[in-house]
Amino acid sequence: MPLIAHSNLPSFERLKQQGETILSKNRADHQTIRELHIGLLNMMPDAALEVTERQFFSLIGQSNQIAQFYIHPFSLDSIKRGEKAQAHVDKYYKNFDQIKSQGLDALIITGAHVEDPDLKKAAFYSDLKEVIDWSYENVTSTLCSCLATHAVLEFRYEQKRQAIGNKCWGVFPHQVLDRNHPLMSGVNTCFNVPHSRFNEISKTQFEKAGVKILVDSKVGAHLGVSEDLLRIVFFQGHPEYDTISLLKEYKREVLSFLNKVRADYPVFPDHYLSPQNKAILNEFKDKLLSGEFSIEDFPEALVSQTLGNTWHDSTIAIINNWIGCVYQVTHEDIDKPFMDGINPEDPLNLK
Image (cartoon, rainbow, N blue to C red; front, side, top):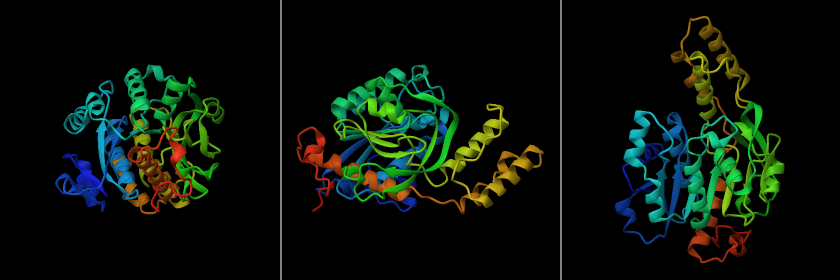
């Protein structure tokens, strides 16, 4: 079944307008399909708050239609937001106490914009640790994105992330290392993943923690699973990104340069822009620096017309498999360790 619009969250209507199948709660209440309740701890900064909602909502909604999906977004009080974003959170998000009270089948924890490698300096450090500790004991599977992956490796495995110098950002080729794990069922053996980060957990650190790496690349391990093979799923990249996400991020970096937040003009994301698009953006840069253009003249509409997406299909397949595994464990009383009862040849148990 599709996503269930169980609140007035604007993302439901926005996704419906984009062609996603959204079912009203009234209609859902008259069906006998089982439910899956998935939490979304959204830690992204204000500019990306609602976009990140829609990205993960859409990925879940496009997965195999085996259940009614109820997604429950929440944030942390320790994440300080501007007036508009805070109003959105106050109106549409639950708090962590409400999440704990109702319970979840699965949890997604987004990344966050924290450049300093020392996570203890983040205002939300203690609150995030509380969520992660609770989810480990009470949620079938927690999917962690980028900074959330770094946090879990520090909280649970004493592996602290390290600064990598220049920002790693762009779209990079990846290779599947373990083709037999259910999360890799039907996934291309080679596919691309966007990355955007200043820090990393190295492959050696993942291995010291007992994490099984499923997908690796020259810019680092991307996808791994905890020692029980499902309880925690680690993404170090950003497979949820839209086609234009890195372009919008590049625009924000240009604006940071103009506002003197950063000293240098940003370089292009790797393996993302065509030569023609680079030429368009270089022309914009020249006119911007000469004073002929302003940030309002940024050629987003023109460049976005020819951007490619080489990661979405693989991401959908992985999320589809993750949802299927969670469904099996949650509704079929499979004993832990989780994977004991999951058939690698049919992880969604659809036969």
